[in-house]
Image (cartoon, rainbow, N blue to C red; front, side, top):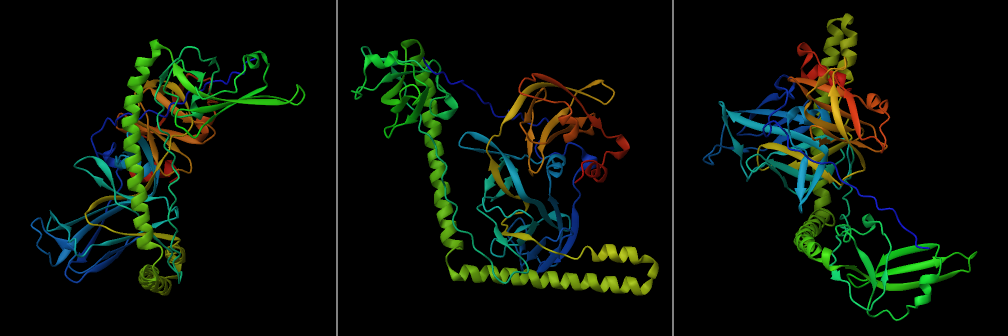
Length: 494
C-alpha cells in the first residue's frame, strides 16, 4: 500500500494596480482633512495635535529650495491615518515589494506633514530635524519606519521608530530582533538515472518550498544508499514521512507500520528527479529561482546587519537609555502643560455658565492620557509610516459580482478588503475576490464616485466556504449628500 498525501496549492491574493492615480484620493469630498498650525521657525516650536501626537520643531528647522535657513512664521499642515478606512480614502498605497515578493503593510501609525512659507513649500534642515512623537496603541517592535517616495512611487525603509511610554520614569530598551526567517535554497532538478529504484509517492509540495515549483516530480534512491531491499516494496506500510537531509537536494524518506501490524521502520536517502520531458522546463524554473534566492539572501543579510547596528546603537549603552528617559520627560512636561490648559478651560466654562456642564465634562474627557508614543526624526516632509509587511494569509478565491441593495448589478471601482483587527488593506482585482478563512472582513469600493461597502456581518450571512466559486456581494452605497469623511467614518464605526 502506498500512502498518498493530498497536494493543496495555495495562491496568495492577487494585487491589482489601483485604477486611480498615485496618491489621488478616490473620493475628493471624503479625503482625510488636514490640520493647520503656525510655528516660529527661528526659535523653534511645539505642536500638540488633536490625537495627542506631539511635533517638536527645533530652532532653524526649515530651509528654502536653495538651502537657506528660514526665519519667521511657517505654516504646518498635518494629518494622521489611524485605520484602514483612512488608508483607503487617502489613496495611499499600502503595499511593499521586497525580494520580488509583494507584501501588505500593517500600520502602527501613519502621518502626513508638510510646511509652507508664504504659500511656497519649505524643506527640512538636515542639521536641525523635526521630531514626531506619534501616539499609538501598537507596541510591536517588529514595526519598521518607512517614508513614501512619491517620485519613484515606493516606500523607503528608514529603520525604526523609538517606543516611548509617557508617564514612565524608565524606558525599557528592546532586545535585538532575531532574524529567524528561513529562505529555502532551490533544489537543482536531476534527470532520472538508470538502474536506480524509483519511489513513486505524492508529497504535499507546500511542505517543501524548494520543490513546489516542479511538476511530475519523483524520488529516486541516492547513489550512496545501500540499505535498500527489493522486498520492502511488497510491504503494506502505514505511514510515510519525508524530511530534508543535511546535504541540499538529498532527502530522507521513512516508511513505518504500526505495532499492531508488526512494528518496523525503514529509511532511505532519496533525491527528487524528473524525466527528460520535464527536465528542460524545470531547469528554466530553477535558474529564475536561483536569482530570486540570491536576492533574498542579500536582502536578509542587509536586514540582519541593520538589525545588529540598531541593537548596538539603541539597546546596550546606558547613554541611550538616559536619552530615551530624557525624551520621555520632555513629553511628560508638554503633556502636563497641555492638561493644565484644559483644566483651566474647564474651570472658566463652569464659572461662566452652569448650563454648559455637559460641555465641560466633554472637554475634561479630552484630557490627554497616553499609552505609547513612537518617536522618530524626519529628514523630509511627506508621508511617514510605522509598518511591518505581512505574509500572505489563507483566503477563499472566487469570482465576484457586485449589486446595490436593490439587486441591480454595479461596477465596483477600486475594491479593497479590510480585515477586522488589522490596520491595513488588501487591494483586490475587479472581478476576483479573496475572502479570508475564519476572519471577519469587509469590502469597500467606489460606485459612481460614491463610497460603497459590505459589512462583516453581511459577508458572514453569505456563508462562503472553500466550495464557493462565485458570489454576489450586495453593496451599501452612500448617498451623494453624505459622501463625506465624517459620515463615512460613522458608517464604518471608526
